[in-house]
Amino acid sequence: MPFDDSGHYTGHSYLVRLLLTGGLDKTMGWLLDFGDVKDRFKPLYRQLDHNPLDKLAGVRDGHSQSVAEWVHAHLSPLVPELSRIDLMENEESGVSLMFHEDMRWPLL
Image (cartoon, rainbow, N blue to C red; front, side, top):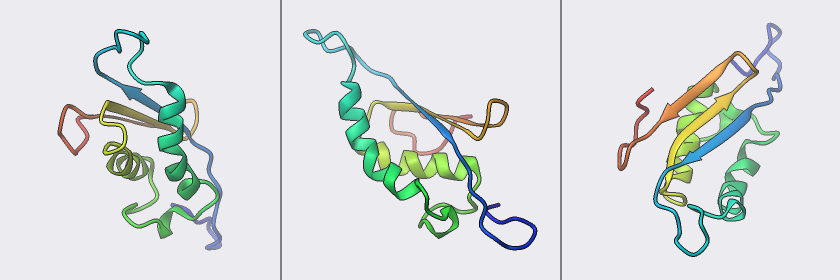
């Protein structure tokens, strides 16, 4: 939860890893330019960074899975190659959500 025992907001840091799947561009030799992915993700990052997650429409409870599902819902129309999102709270805790083709829910 985003609150401590006294009811004050707590801050969290996350590592977000986006995995893409698809065919390589024959000229460039890669799937999608990293700069393009970064530019498409940046507006979502701004909504997540230093903002209370419980106030973000569509994030149910502030937990990692809910945040990762929110990222998928907003980023997949911009990056249809998105096939997996890893959202880590620390080295030992987090969630990996895998998506297949037009599926809109996590496989894992």
